[in-house]
Image 1 (tube, rainbow, N blue to C red):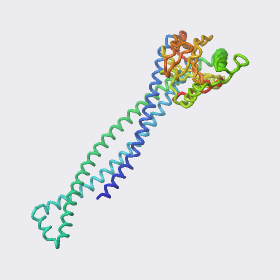
Image 2 (cartoon, rainbow, N blue to C red):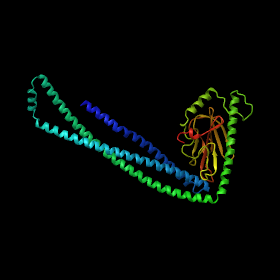
Image 3 (spheres, rainbow, N blue to C red):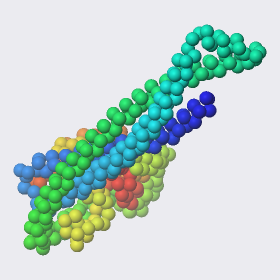
Image 4 (cartoon, rainbow, N blue to C red):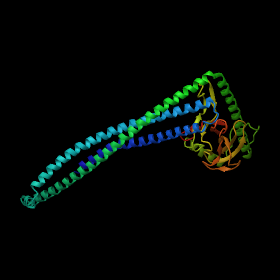
Length: 409
C-alpha cells in the first residue's frame, strides 16, 4: 500500500512539473504583452498630443514605423500565448482522461468491496471468522487483514472523492483556458486590422516623401551635421572634466583637453567597479519612454539608403517627463549647447553619463546625486510637440552603447 502511494505521488509530480513550467512561461508572455500594449498606447497618446503641432513628414514616418514594429511584436507575443494555451489545454485533456479512467477503476473496485462487506456485515460473522482460526497467530493475522481491508476501503473512498474534486477543478481550468485563448485570438484579429491601417498610412506618407526625396535628404544631412557638432562639444566637456579631475588628483596634464583617462582615487575606483557590476541592470534615464534612435551607425529609418550615426540613444517620452540619474555620482557639468537645449553630466568613477535636451534643471554642479534622482524636465519641442532626450554613456573618453547597460533597453 505504501509503495503504491509513493508511485502515485511521483506520477503526480511528473504530471504537474510541465504545468508549472508552462504557467511561468505564460506569466512572462503576459507581462511582455502588457508592456507592448502600454508602449503602443503611449505612442498613440504621443501622436494624439502632436496632432495640433506642425510636424514634419519624416517625424510622422518615424513614429508610424516604430508603432508598426511594436504592433508586430505584440501580435507575435499574443500568438505565442495562444499556442502555449493550446498546449496547456491538450495537457488538461489528457489529465482529465486519465482521471476519468482511474475513477472508473476505483469505483468498480469500491463497489466490489461494498458488496463483499454487505455479505459479511454481521458482527457475529466477523467473530466467527476470528474464532475459526487454527491458532492465535492465524487469528491475529485475520484481525490485521480485517483492519487493512477497512483502511483500504476508506482510502479508496478518499481517492474517489479527491479525484472527483480534481476533475471538477480541471474542467473549470479548461473552461477558463478556452475563454482566455478565444480572447487572445479576438485581440489578435483587432491588432491585425490596426496593423493594416498603420501600413496603409505608412505607404501614403512614404509616397509623399519619395516625391521630395532630395529635399528630405538635405534635411537629414543637416541634422547629422548638427548632431556631430553637439557630440564634439560633449566630448570636449568630458576631456576637460578628466583633465580637471586628474589635476586635482595630482596627475600632471601636459595640454588642456588632451587627457582621455581618469586617474582614479580609491573611492572613485569603488564607484566605477559598482557601476561596471550593474551592467545591463541600470534603470532607464526616464520613468517611461521608447528608444527612437539606437546607438551606432545605421540606416535612416525613413530613407534607408542614407546612413546616420548616433553617439548615444534618443528616447521619446511624455511631455513633462523628468530625466533621472541612472546611478549615484557627482554632477560635473550643466551646459547650454546650441541645438541641444541644456545638458547634465554625471561622473560615476571613470564613467560619465550625459542627459541632454533638459530644462528646469533641479541639480547643480558639484552636487552628489542618488540613483533615480530627478535632474530636470525633458524639453518638449514647441514646433513638433515631441519630448526627446538624448542619453550617452562614456567610459573615460570612450563611447559605450547605452542599450548594453540599461535594463531591457
